[in-house]
Image (cartoon, rainbow, N blue to C red):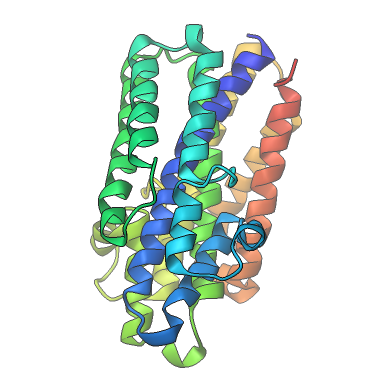
Amino acid sequence: MLGRTANGLYWMFRYIERAENIARLVDAGQRMSLTRSGANEDDDWDGVLQSAGVREAYDEVHGKLTGADAIDYLMRDRSNPSSVMSCIDYGRNNARMVRTALTRDTWEATNECWIELKTLLGKRLKTAEVPEMIEVIKRRAGLIRGAFHGSMLRNELYNFARIGTFIERADNTARILDVKYYVLLPSISHVGSSLDNAQWESILRSVSAHRAYKWAYDPEYKPANIADFLILNGQMPRSLAYCYEKIVSNINYLGAEYDKRLPAHDTADSIRKMLQTLTIKSIMDQGLHEFLEDFVSRNNKLGAEISDGYRFYE
């Protein structure tokens, strides 16, 4: 398969996943801001922008941090390459580039998503419109994934798309967990308070894990349990452990298909092994922020190795 086809599929699904993840970050930020009162309400958006990796870029566009401007920047600002609308544009452009490698169902779901969001995000959203907009984005991303899963052959095309999805998802889960634990908690005095619990609940809801967490653990929100759930629980479809099971599975299919093992295979295996052998206690003892920062760096390294190894730009 040509490298540019692999590149198009990989990035198509990274961008679709990123669009949904940014919407989920906005959802988390809005939910957390509702637990605040007074002048501190907009402070939560600093952490959300940092999590999305666009804090400095935001400052270049807006002189002052406000919740309304942060939402607009994350949802529809074309100058922000990580905004929902920018990601949907990039995802559709990649889909067009590999149109003949996609089933009709997958292409139509992608194109319909772009058409609807282009209309709905054509104007600045009112605060009351944001929750429904987030649901539309999540629903449309789900329809694209559903069309893809239900109609594509399980071959190397499928593998590249899946690897892109889970590298992006792992990155997002790590970032959103780091934002709560390292940036958003106002002070140690809030640990265990109603504010702290509300923020943890918001994080779980932002990754569609609120009810699943209660099935897997006791109903009480405990930071160590939540971190364990989002990092090491292999049954949670947005956990780091689950993402890497899928990444390794799909990259091993590519290795068998091309009868070649690349540095990316070793990197993926080492990250999965780390997630299999660590305990949440050892992660907390090391420092959750430090662990997540290292994970994001290693995840990015894997993405670069996949791009180089499979000659995405040739």
